[in-house]
Structures are given as C-alpha cells and as structure tokens.
Length: 226
Image (cartoon, rainbow, N blue to C red):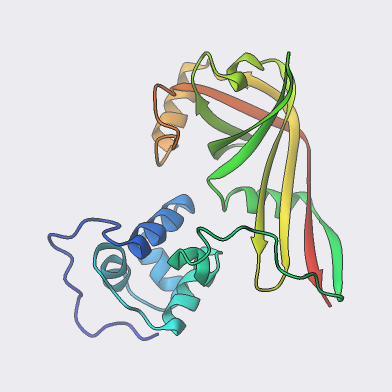
C-alpha cells in the first residue's frame, strides 16, 4: 500500500466516525501506537490512517490485511464481521497441537488486549467478571467500584485471563495470570494509572477504585497447526 501523494482531509472529522474507524482507532490506542507508528508498520502515512479513522472509507482488502496484521487482529475483527458471531464453532483440524507459551510471550500478549476476565472467590462461590485493564509494570490493573465483587476480593488469590480465537484457522491462544489481588493505595501509583489509562471502563458508572493483580504464575497456551 503506497503512501498517498497528497494529505487526506481530516479537518472537521471525528475520530471513529464509522464502525471501521472506531475499531481501528480503539485497537491502535490499546497498543499505544500513534498514527505515524501504525503507518510505518503497515506501509501508509499518518494522513491515511487519520482518514480511515475519521471518514467513511472503503479501503482495499490488501490495505485491511496489512492494517489488521500491524494491529495484531483479523480483518473480521477490524471490520466488525465477527462482532455478532458466536466464537468456537469452526470445525477442528486434524493437524492441531497445543503448545505452551513462555513468560516473555505471555507478557507481550497481555499488552495487546484491553479487556480480560478476573476470577475471584466469593461467599456464593467463584465469580468471573469482564474488566477493562492495563498492564502496570509486572501487574495487571483495572478500575471498579468500591462495592463491587472484585473490590471485596482484595487480599485474596485471584486469576486473570485473556484469549484470542481465530475462526478461520480454528486456532487461538490464551494467557492466565494467578496472584494476589489488592487495592491500589499509593498516591503516586494512582496518579500514574489515571494518566496511563486510555479509556473509561465500558461498564460505566462510578468506577474509580483501582485494583491490581500481581502475578506469581503466568502461563499461556496456543493452538497451532502443522
């Protein structure tokens, strides 16, 4: 995909004007990439990335493939074609193997997502809750309310999980972190987390109570094909 000869118009646009633009911007921001950085990775310039995010555009399939690859997602993820599809219904392949991921790759994959699941023990039994999260040093941090189930689990062992399913190849991966869940109370750390967070929790409401899981065990698995 060659860089455009002249800048694409961006004035008056609003980031994520279309579903494609919103998804592209969200994935880019979740990875901490500027438009310039994403453009360098997929062979475009910042003006074209801005145009895709802010205007109704119909990029070629080749463009979509390169942008999706740079963002670590599929074209269906980027266009929303998989948004309403029930995952995991693809037929299994015969050449499948399950391999373990090392800690370095697990930490890399944690940095590619923005939503995961926190699993805690409650008086009524185990509970698994989706949360918007960010990687904070060696820990995994997220916001909730002080009365929420996750907040009440402070000081206990918890688990955090993310995964990715590729329906086309009937493959995917998962990462699991296990450790103690605690409330963040240090003022400097709270300020840093507030400044680092790129969005508000999707669940809405008063969710300003930061929690952090510090892993003592970090494991992952990937389905691969020979």
